[in-house]
Image (cartoon, rainbow, N blue to C red; front, side, top):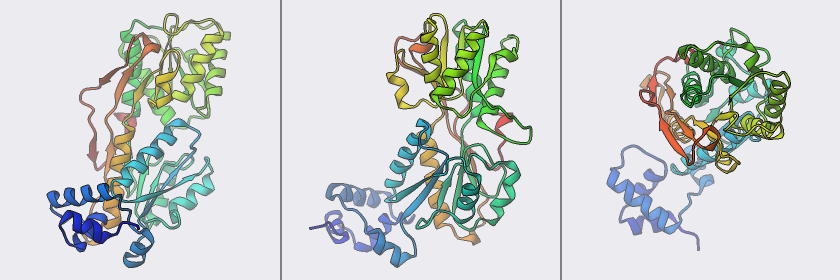
Length: 364
């Protein structure tokens, strides 16, 4: 027989109403009581009847996550982290892959995902010029990523510029002086904000701070950020005869292609060329050599975004809560590709997660 709310109430020694309050994440339950109920839920394996709960409350008990593409490891692992965070609140997740289609992004932004109570949205094609679209949104929404800033909605993102600078400083601290960057966008526009642009800014700032010359030949375009494009950009760099002793790839997928191309060319990593990526996806621990990377705080991003979305779902307009913008902690994970013999995580001081009323990553 299936486990019921009554079973949970009996085991926890509370009323069914209290169990219902915990399941629906109501704020007025005493922490000790909440923990006892959650322990009973876990012990019995209780799963709420989302359909019945939805009929009673007008909610589905499901949130949406819209991302550009799950082929990229970062978004696949972000989706996993969002599911884990949502399950802690007894919520399901519907995931939509938008494929960089602007029309689909506009549709999802303005109307949300069907059968969901709110949306976590990471756009790829929408940008600052589309900020006015946020004024038309009438469903709970939390933005992810770097495409739209300053709108009337909560926003959770990462320290792109600062983290990229730290990655390049890690290479410089290892004695590297001719550092290339793979993953620049082919059509940079001053009125748009992209992760690639922010990370290239951080790359340049690190070189300038170290007194190293900026050489545009070391900045290589690669888009989209897939391993094949990382490999192709590296092959082009080497074919041009450019002296290089380190490469900063703007995401780990590009870095996998970089390492492959260097091996094909007989360049040893890290002896001849050190390599560092960005995102710290799980696969990087198992490459040969293992990949150093920036951990941008993916799990923290997921937990914070889900918590913010739940608050917006439960929020009453009369509360007048202003939009919040949050940047997660990051760290440098040093592995074999930059000369490490084992994984060493290096948190960057003074860059803890923070919630603000305004944000401009490029000025971080």
